[in-house]
Length: 163
Image (cartoon, rainbow, N blue to C red):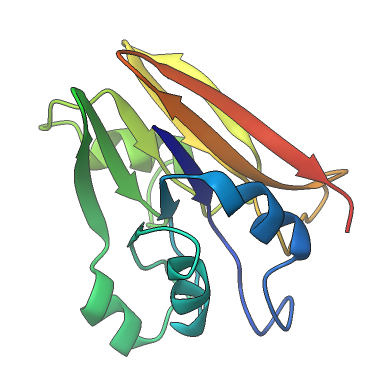
């Protein structure tokens, strides 16, 4: 199963719609994870035309989106458990907050966002994966999203693009 991973779309503040690279890259995925800062539920509706979506709200999402999506989820993909959290909070780094959010859960991967910085590292046998942002690269050279190819293991990949 291939999962498209996206976060920090910030539509319509940073872009009027999702970039073409997102639609093209996700065209053959089986599922999509959005790790928050969606801003408008229309983004989720657009992604749902491609594949089923699991999403959580981020710190800039309106209250209606927060109530609809919640801020933490765990999904099962075969034998793999994926925790999803935006990454916002008060103390520690984005990475620290993502790890702390799932400290009492048994998971294989944490998908998070918030920093807009692509990240892919193992921590205590848990893959931590931040896809970056497809609309607000900040100081990064490229915009980015991600793919998780899941069999009995997880093969992560960042997709970088310039427009």
